[in-house]
Image 1 (cartoon, helix red, strand yellow):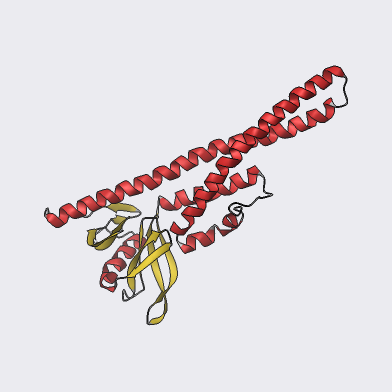
Image 2 (tube, rainbow, N blue to C red):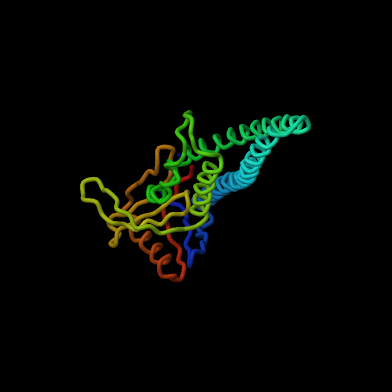
Length: 255
């Protein structure tokens, strides 16, 4: 993971983001390259989430169809057992069809398992406050490698809910009020500005306790950078009050 001491960060007005221009020198070229890599990373994350959204929509429709079809076939099998020879033949056909559907359900179940595993891998990259908001859905995820009594439709609903919320969070800039612990001092309340799952900047009301954070496989890592407190406060103020956008310099992390 590469840390840049300084990089041009986005200013914004009413949720709009503007790229900071820097002098055309070696530092500018490095910052330009860094921002390009950051944009490519953001595009890759967005593409993966969009691919999941498309796949889950197909699986959701298929699961509903399979559940309805299985219920219908079970009813037809019961009625067919009361009929004569012709009904017996029909019953055999229905049984065969039901077996085919059960095989198809197994395929859906396997793909659903992959999506659930992917969500478990995604969870450490989500901010703690965000994870708390979707905990009811997370709790219903089956334990990895263990059987579950949940139906396909319920499991699919959980996957859809989590991915939909993750996609929504990743495509907006959001401000959260949090309590953060600081080494050698008491916990303080800070405002944290999240740029989706890419990076976040926080500061208390004075700018004395300020810094930034970024997601890792072990959870979000937070760095104290009080020297950027004033700039972070200005950026938060622009977001809260819709002030005229200004250029600010902030640290940037490229994954």
